[in-house]
Length: 137
Image (tube, rainbow, N blue to C red; front, side, top):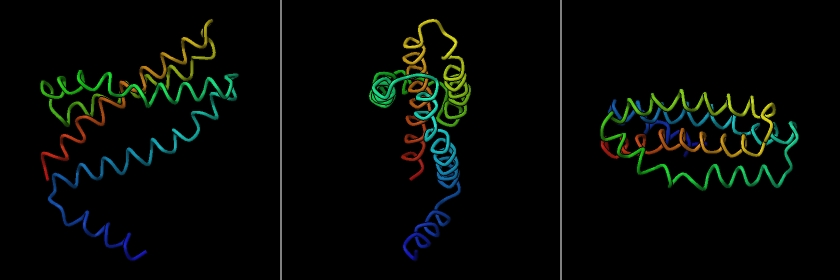
């Protein structure tokens, strides 16, 4: 417990710009972990098999590197903090695709579309966040 408390104290002693990055990371990680825990359960309850859910997870997390160069070039044009903000509508669209996926005639296409939009949102968040962190160290 003392090590955790010491780690939190170090976070608050860092410069104010990097504190914004840490707070953003803490809040985003907490919220996305709460949501992300139930996405596989939701996919299983709407009729997808365990194999399809695992393929979704592999496609979602495994294809981040494909969109990263585009995200990096967009970061250079727009800026770090703006792109972190712009990822939110894409992230909301990801959840809307998950919601309407059960009504699409070909749900497998909806599953891959949701994974595609999800990793686009993930890339639009992680690339500028890490760049902002490195810039302010």
